[in-house]
Length: 457
Image (tube, rainbow, N blue to C red; front, side):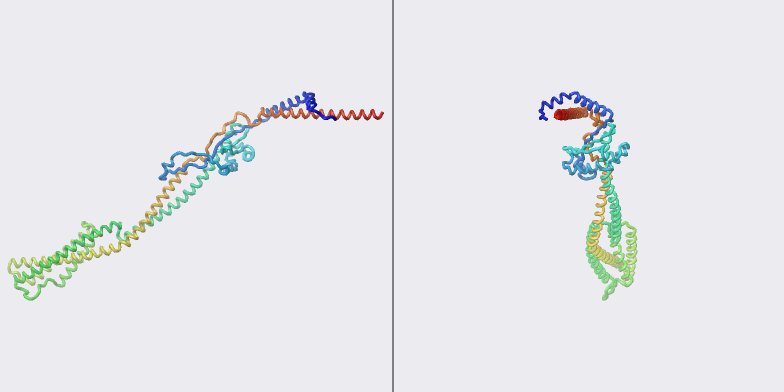
């Protein structure tokens, strides 16, 4: 068999042109018929992205005004950061959510064939949803975005719920500690009889200065009064010509008792005036007792002087009365001095104790302030958490929502016709060459048979 040229092949095709054309037409017609018989499938596409980071927003922070400023929200540029979102989209839980909303979409079909996901070169996530119903295909694609956002919201809210539970427990504990610290401070102040250490130090210092001034004045008055007594006694001796060699007696056991009692009462009045106001009932009662004791003392001294002196003229009687008044005044001054000395001593003792009291008070106060600060911080954090919980956050930014497609994705008649045309031509050409091959074989076989017959003759 001779080697065929390109012209021979072309002649074969030309010779079988009708068969080739018939096969091609049958292929196209068959494809058109099948395409029309097959129920079309529509594919909807949704495009979105999950921002690389969301602007932090605090309602109660001091920087909240600055945080309210709008920021740029862009997708992540690292494919590894986007991979988890594709994993979530492929998860069974989202497929089940979609199935609950659209029962006609089976979970297995959603996971295997009806939905595809793609990450574009622009770092956009694309969802392809296919169904015979174009509206359903679009709704399923949009539902995937919605449930991905819901899944991210639920994960975020779980953290806030845990935070709120912990903050509530901490708030209860701190509130309990704060109440205990306040009660401890109250008992400490009652025990040490203070309301404010700084204020008490100031008041005690002022009172000590006042009492010391009174004490110095009283000492001066006692000295002056003592001189007056001596002068009066000398004058009485001269006028009455009595007790020429003996001292004038101005005391006895009862008078000493009254003097001590007057001194104690003066001390009580001075001590009470440190803590109580002048109009307080206790102060008034003490002053009344002091006056009664002073009056009794005055009468006793007057009786004592009278028993030693027999007045003979008016001047003598005046001297005697003056002496009685001076002695009584001296006893009062002595009692006041004793009371002032005791009061100043008590104030000094109190002031010496106050540094340690102040140190303990400061520790207790710092403890209370610390608990207050923690309590207020926890209250703010809890309020912030509750406000963040009620805040609606969209973690997904939708670029294009899926819309019902106008044209099916399968079958595409134009594409199928082109494929059928190519397939028909290929099949026709193959058929033409196959027939030509069989003819060539048949001719060769007949030629051999004829040659064998002729050679046999």
